[in-house]
Amino acid sequence: MPETMTIGRLAKVAGVNVETIRYYQRRGLIGEPRKPPGGHRRYTDTVLRQVAFIRRAQQLGFTLEEIGRLLEMCGSPEQGDAVTIAEQRRAVVDARIGELERMRIELDRLIAACKKSKRGPSPLIRALFGDE
Image (cartoon, rainbow, N blue to C red; front, side, top):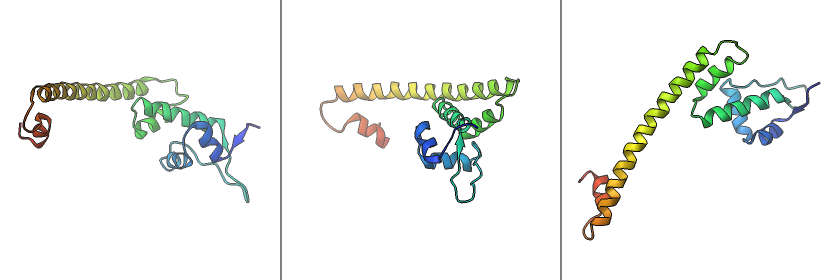
């Protein structure tokens, strides 16, 4: 019989809190084991692996909806849908990188303007008010 654990132990081993486990259950990402009469629900190592999968996918920026779709593909010999999901996520990341680069350029410009300006209101403050 596989080793099982309580939700508290699962959360601790997975590095999340109990409410995160319950949230994943409500979202349908992981199953909720049957509760035996007078007992506690017991979770298997498979659920622990699923939680680890979810966390790693979140670190790569996948949404919970995308993660759910990826979990549904587990064990499927076809990679096409997974690749499509990853390519779509990559496009979102690329767009965000572009936004961050534009932000950095603007911040550099404002910082340089602030360093040059010795008197009067800060160019940064003026820019944030839309006066510049």
